Amino acid sequence: MPDCRVVNASPLITLAKVGQLGLLEEPGFALIIPDPVAREVLRWPAEDPARKALSAGWGGTPVPVAPDVDIMEWGLGPGESGVLTLARSRQCVAVIDDGAARAAAVALGVRLTGTLGLVLRAARLGRIASAAEILEQLIDVGLRLNNDVVRDALAQVTGESWPRR
Image (cartoon, rainbow, N blue to C red; front, side):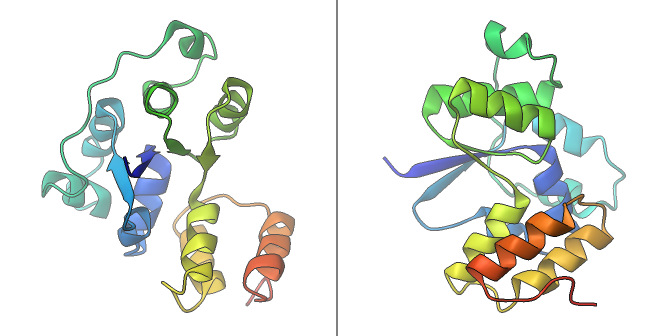
C-alpha cells in the first residue's frame, strides 16, 4: 500500500494561494482530504484558490470521518480532529500546521509534517528550485513560521539563507 497524507485546511489553503498545491501530491503518496476539512475550505470566498481547486475535484472525494473520542478530548476543531483520526487509523502522515493539533499528534503517536516540511522535502527531492522563495510567498499569504526554525531548517536541508529579503 502506498504511503498516505491526510491534509488539514491551513496547508491546503496557503499552498493553493501561492500556486503550490502540487507539493501535496507526490508519487507513492495517496492524498486524503477529510470531509470536515473540505467543508471548511468550501466556505471560503468563491475566488479562493483552494476552494476553486476542491470544487473542481482536485484531491479526490473528501473522506467522511467520525473523530475518535480520545482525539475529541483535545478540544481541536473538526478539521484537525478529522485529520488526526484518519491519519492514526490509516497509519498516514498528518499534514498540519496548528500547534495544538501538532502537540496532539505527537502525544497520540501520529506521524506528522507541516507546510514547512513539505516545502523542504520538495527542495531536497529537486521538485522546486528555492525553498526560501516559496516560504517567503507562504508567509506573505498568512502562514506563520518561526524565523529561527526556518533559518535552521533551510541551512540544514538546502543551504539557503534566511531571511532572503
